[in-house]
Length: 215
Figure 1 (cartoon, one colour):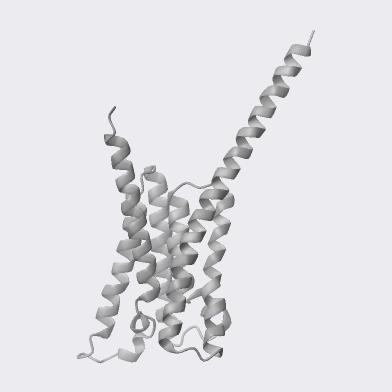
Figure 2: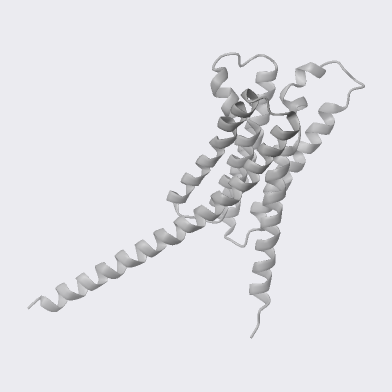
């Protein structure tokens, strides 16, 4: 029996899992404050922090894009996942630049959630993965896990948690939350498929019974 295609599919899936975990971790662990607050470095030729952070940001984008592209699924699903990742991350960078420049002074509470690093990491990582995997639309509800970091983060700050403890806590929340979300999406998808199959079987039996009862 030829296990070549199955082995290739398994290898691609494994590589995609590694890339997704690594990319999601980088998205929350990388300090991209120089991108978000780039105006602070305006006119500073010798300060290379913006360039370093920009390179790190592009590495995050490339890693999450690779995760979606490696998945053994249809081309359209991979394109949809890659599109979500790119749109989410580049909008984050764009609005972060605007906010850092003082151009988004209103609705600060909203921007503090939307531009939260953990929120964006989970939205891009989990959202891109669920779409690329072709999960049932109901499973997209797991993306709500992205709201956990912006909710927990301020509580940690209010509790006077050290910067190191805060970073570790947020990284753990993002990685663990991302894993839990994608597994939950898989579970919801399987459950909905079983429900659909059971409903289809019921309709077939009812149709068959109706046909037999007709004169």
